[in-house]
Amino acid sequence: MDAAEVVVIGGGVMGTSIAFHLAEAGVRRVVLVERDELGSGSTCKAAGGIRAQFSDEVNIRLGARSLEAFARFGTRPGQEIDLRRVGYLFLLSRAADVEAFERSVALQNGLGVPSRMLTVAEARRLSPLIEPDGLLAAAFSPDDGHCTPESVVLGYATGARRHGAEIRTRCAVLGIDANGGRITAVRTSHGRIETSTVVCAAGAWSAAIGAMAGVDLPVQPLRRQIVFTEPMPDLPRPVPMTIDFTTSFYFHGEGAGLMLGMSDPDERPGFALGYSDAWLPRLTEAIGLRAPRLLDVGLTGGWAGLYEVTPDHNALIGEDREVSRFLYATGFSGHGFLQGPAVGEVIRDLYLGREPFADVAPLHAARLAGDRLRPETNRV
Ligand SMILES: Cc1cc2nc3c(=O)[nH]c(=O)nc-3n(C[C@H](O)[C@H](O)[C@H](O)COP(=O)(O)OP(=O)(O)OC[C@H]3O[C@@H](n4cnc5c(N)ncnc54)[C@H](O)[C@@H]3O)c2cc1C
Image (tube, rainbow, N blue to C red):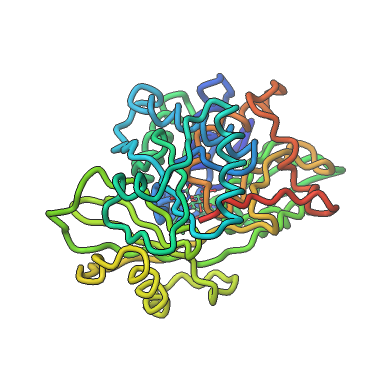
């Protein structure tokens, strides 16, 4: 008989972090099931941005805790992740955004995050590529930055295996058996695994996993794209993660050049994953406004990935109230990579019945059935 104490579904940053934290805590027979390769979902498509600058207190706590974990990643779980603490610089050109960021910075400071408001001149000194026209102010936190998603997945997967977890790739979950609100097994393309506990960490595909257990996880896939520039030998370094908050155009250093990204308001929910150039005119317009020097730099290609979006752009973290021991960590709406370390810790504690370091009760999926939406407004 194939049996597990916990089956974790999904081999992205969430699933591997959860498997690592459970196995490290001594949970026996943790089995992670990934239908493709580790990191092949959204995680290895991410821009790698990590930050604690959010508007929601829970996100600030999860971001700050993850930043600490990323800083110690070389020793626990033990992996080089090319961490760059270059800071996140939000450029603000609307008075309402300046007020909202001032409130967020005060909240962040109260939680120990060293963010601060900057003048436009200070922002330009930090990120000299920017054109200041129309800017009113900026917000910056030096602790934020970026690191490499595939290394983080590798580190957690290796650490999970070291502590006895089993990772099965090319193994798709096809169904979840439950009886009277209790899980009995997970059915996969490689057979049935007897278990009483499932953790859904299936990213943009989580609604389908939830439906297998009769659990509503309202997560929608939304395509997002990034592109890379040619090498820029004269680029002043370090380059902070620079975000033009009004247009959502952002860039950060990547190799010898830059990575560029932006949301596309024409994008509609769906699993389409092909890269398309249709967004480039809008991106070019945003570059022309905020970083016109980049118009002279060639692009070397890019890729598309999926955001896993909830109605209030905040994560779903918790345990279902009807189906016992169906836990979920999904719907990160564009900031799941950076929350991976902290959420792995939280799910470990929810499973073990310990109090997590942060109260994630407001992120329970049940909020979406009522009127307790919890919007995160500092979105990229
Ligand atoms: C272009 C882009 C840029 C981004 N930039 C950032 C950023 O800078 N910072 C940040 O924090 N976030 C960023 N994100 C968001 C981030 O990538 C995600 O929030 C995060 O990777 C989610 O991780 P996950 O482990 O939950 O999901 P995933 O990495 O998608 O993992 C889910 C896994 O579940 C597997 N799966 C699905 N169904 C099944 C099944 N039936 N059986 C078995 N396995 C299954 C999938 O194959 C997949 O590998 C970005 C996303 C994109 C697309």
